[in-house]
Image (cartoon, rainbow, N blue to C red):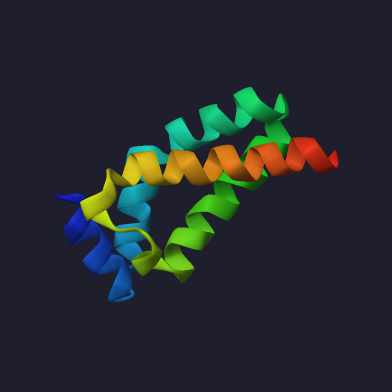
Length: 88
């Protein structure tokens, strides 16, 4: 399934699409968050935050601009860096 198809399913409220995205990309998102924060708990929170954001605002991802994995990892990098910067 293409990233565009997955985005369309998410926009339609298909919870299975979120599960598919999570199964496909969570390990990468978590790995980036773990590397940046150095904390399992913080990495888990960042991963949850990133996928919640995808669920709540699926149209904020534009498949014409890159892969879903890249978008998710970029959000994870940002969220993890913010946590490190504020000490949380």
